[in-house]
Length: 210
Image (cartoon, rainbow, N blue to C red; front, side):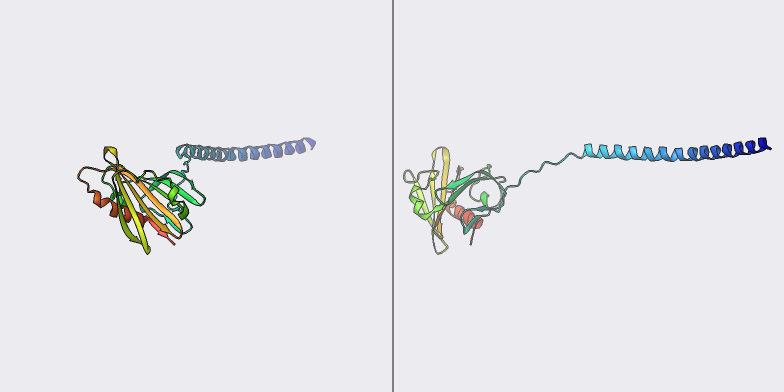
């Protein structure tokens, strides 16, 4: 009788072990598949991360330059700032270069090089000590006046050696002297008389007043 009981217990244990083995056998392919999928996803993610390089953020140039409390230089053509700084007690100065030979700056000069311009401001009392790029008190200088904001603006042109021409626009607005200067090569055949109106147009179309 005891042997029969022992045999029955052994049979139950064997059946239980058999079921456990079958369960583990069925579970094994699922684990392999899950592990393979995880590795595949990880590898794909790593490949994607190596293909997409991080982009370096380049600071954009400002689109407008504050000259005074009431005046802003707002070019219609793209440009970069070469230099900037303060001038006297309350003025500023910017040296910019246009990056393309298009639009308004093309009407001033016909050369292939993009135009550069220096825009400055200072208190009207400092007009006599303003650090102009060129001295126009000597040499062949032509002055042209334009009506502007109820007053007159002046454009001075001076022929420099090697065919270069210096051009300066000046106007007074709300107690501040505004000065725009540039220099470029005057090509043969270009009329010197066409420079002052082109310079005045360039300034008035880029200058925002409030």
